[in-house]
Length: 129
Image (cartoon, rainbow, N blue to C red; front, side, top):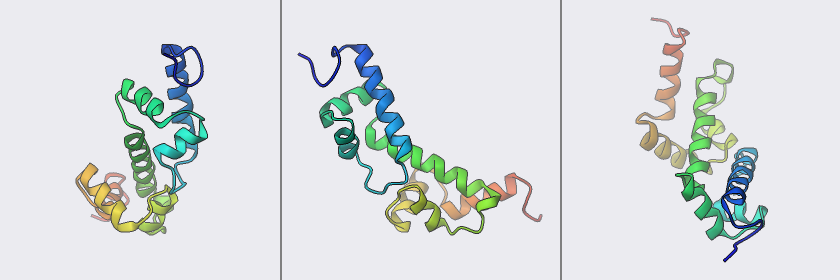
């Protein structure tokens, strides 16, 4: 049985994985980026997209969340962006609300975004001590 495009083999799975991760990276800032939106944009079924990501040890939603958190961490640690409120950084990378972002961030990293930002300043030596 062949699902989607290509020959249905490992090569087409890898191509779909690469296309989907590239699409996700390009659209992280969009708050309505969901697995369904990715599948629709790539003209594949949600099931096929899930299966391909599962074979790579991840989920589509998990990848979106991880990449968004990575971008937020980078921005929170950037002294050049210290003027931006935490909520603005969260919104910049597609988190729909400040409270949800803070909960997700703390659950994944063990500290709040503000604590992370303060710690980054200390690690970078820009805080007074």
